[in-house]
Image (cartoon, rainbow, N blue to C red; front, side, top):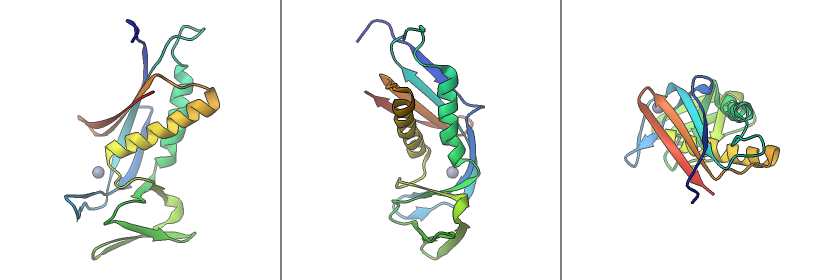
Length: 163
Ligand SMILES: [Zn+2]
C-alpha cells in the first residue's frame, strides 16, 4: 500500500431518491409498505491522474444521479425474496405475501435482482451499477469504492468494494 491515499466523495442532498418498499425479516415477517427519502453518498479511492485528481467530481455526481434517478418515485421490489413473490405482465406487477396482495403499474416499479430491498443491498446495487458505468463510459476503475445509503437521519448502510 502506498503511504498516501486520495478519496473523492459526492453526497447526499443532490443524490436523493424517494421510493416505496417493504422488506421481510426474521424469516418470514414482512413490513408494511412505506417509503423513504434515501440519500446516497459515493466515495472512490485512487491515484491522482494527469489532472491531479482521482476522478472528475461532476462526472461522478452525474453518473451516480443517473442511477438513483432510475429508483426515484418508484416502488422497489425484490426479485429474489423467498417470501415476497413478485410476478406480472407488461402492464402490471402483482406482489404476494401470505394473505396480502399488492398490484402496481409496471412503469412505477423497479424490480431489483436482490433478496431484500434493504439499505445494504440498495447500496450494493448502486455501487455495482456505478462501477460498470465508470468502466464503460470513462475507462475508470477505482482502487476502492464505498456507497452509503441513508434511509433516515442517522441510519445508513455502507457497501465497501476493493479492486
Ligand atoms: Zn424502509
